[in-house]
Every structure is written in structure tokens, then in C-alpha cells.
Amino acid sequence: REPAGNEWGTGAISNARFGGVRLSDVLRDAGVSQPAEAVRAGVQHVHFEGSDGCRVSVPAKKALDEAGDVLLAWEMNGEPLPRDHGYPLRVLVPGHVGVRQVKWLTEVKLAEEDAPGMWNRGLAYKVFGPSVTSVTEEEIAATPTMQEMPVQSMIAEPRPNAKLDAGSPVDVRGVAWSGGGRGIVRVDVSADGGASWHKATLAEGSEQPPDRAWAWTFWEAEVPVAEAEGATTIICKATDAAHNSQPESVAGIWNLRGLNNNSWHRVPVVAIGDGDDDEAASEPQAAAAPAPPARSNSRYGGAFESSEPPAPTSEPRYGGAFRK
Image (cartoon, rainbow, N blue to C red; front, top):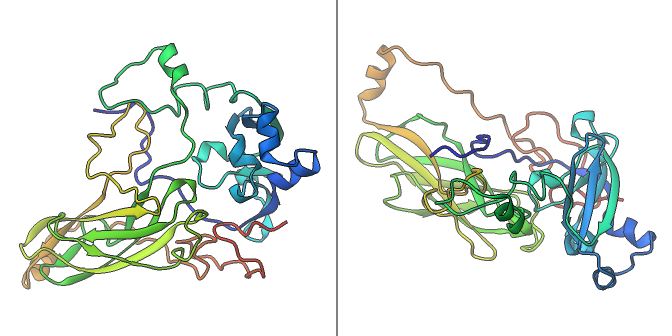
């Protein structure tokens, strides 16, 4: 079944190093000294509005807590925030779905109710059960909107339809991430369609605090390709610090809008024998898929980018150097 939403493939996630000021510090200067006091006063949500008319909200606990790391950012990768990334000011709500990261920020508002409009109260970010194909306005209103996202992982190498030696080891690399700052504790990889599994080595990103892991975690594994020649599948699945794991299939999580599809990531490949390379070379070949961009030396600040990373700061933070 086709959902009523845009197809994002493996998603739209990247990492950068953002600079600015914590929202909690700004609100403290404005007289909101403690999150608990604000909640007792009736503040349940914090609204953000951009000059493009986008208005969203997040729970007050996330926005007011210093550990939530909500940032009013004016800098990206050591430079002034680019215009298409929200210049002169945007909000970063790490661990939450992208729509909460309002660009061209013009207003921050404390409120008892969530933000009006399609992004919080409309259908756009509402998740329903797999058998629901239509909903009423009452059902939409009664369903909470997405905030944090589920655990997810993806394979960057090898590329789809790559030809691999049957029975030989292959290097598999990718990234994993989970919403709410939940760190990645394990990634399992299979190169024989799920018949056997191998634990990946967690690389940069794995040292993040398990409850404030805002950036993705790189992983890599050497796994044996299926012995039998022909089409097979490389698969990865991640587990986060709360021991949430990715489901095998989308069947049980399908929803009307196509949201939160974090089922196992699969990459089709072809296992070939010793003589198959010569035969393949004599056949017309389709254009090869472009190789993934090279990883920079600063993986948190622009992973899979080939440009030079910004100079390191003396206050390293994960996924965005929350510098004042």
C-alpha cells in the first residue's frame, strides 16, 4: 500500500556543528527560573514560529531543561548560519523530528496548549495503526503528534547491486541513530539475507552520553557474503540505550502517512563466483551508482562530506558544539 506522504528513502538526516545559546538560558534570563515552576504555572508547551509562517511546539520539559540542549543557533560549522539553513536565527531541538527545527525564527512563546496548525494538530505528523486508511477530524485531534523518533540505521557501503565474491568477507559501513538522545548500543549486520548475523564495531559517536546522544554513530563490520551465487541482501538493524530495536518488516508499522518506518535497512547485492567477473565485463553495464562522499575528519560536524571540517573548539559537544 502506498502511504499518503513523501518518500524519503533512508531519511533526511545529517550532522553539523551549531553554535548559539541554550534556550533554557534565555528563558532563565527572562524570568523562567525552573522548568518545574513553569509547569506549575500552566506552561505545557513551547511554541516556535518562523518568518515563513511555520509554527510548531515541543513539550515544555524538553525546551526548558538544560539537559534538553535546545539551542537558538546563529552559527553552523564555524560560519554564520547559511540563509537556507535559517539565517539569522533558528532553533535546534536535538533528538526530535526535523519539523520542530524551525528556521528563520521570529517568536518563542510559552503556552498551555500545543501550537495550532498542520504541523502539530493536523494530519501531517500523526501516526495511526497499520489497518487505518482514513481518519476523521476527531481522530486526528485525539492523536498526539510526533516528537522523538525511533531507532534507525542505514548502510552506506557497499552500494546497491554491487557485485561481491560469494563466500568472501565484505566490509559493511553505515550509521545509526535514535531519537530522544538515546545512544546506540549495538548494530547487527547480515550479508546473507538474515540467515546469520554479526555484531558491528561501533566507531565515532559511540562515546556520546547514552541519554544525550544527539549525533549519529558510525559502525563497521566485516561479514561473509552468502556462499550461493546470485542475488542476496545485506541487512543492518540497530538497538538503542533503551533496548529498542528495529522491526524486521514495515508490515506491522505501516501507517497512513508513511511515518517512522524504521524497519531493517536492506541493500540488494549480487554474490558472484570466480569466473563471473570476466563474463560481467563483456556484458553491457548500466551506469554505476555514485560512490558515497568521503567522510570528513570531523564526523559529527558534517559526516560524509568531502569539504574541510571546521577547526575544533575547546568545548567539544556531540552533533553541535553547544557554545554560547
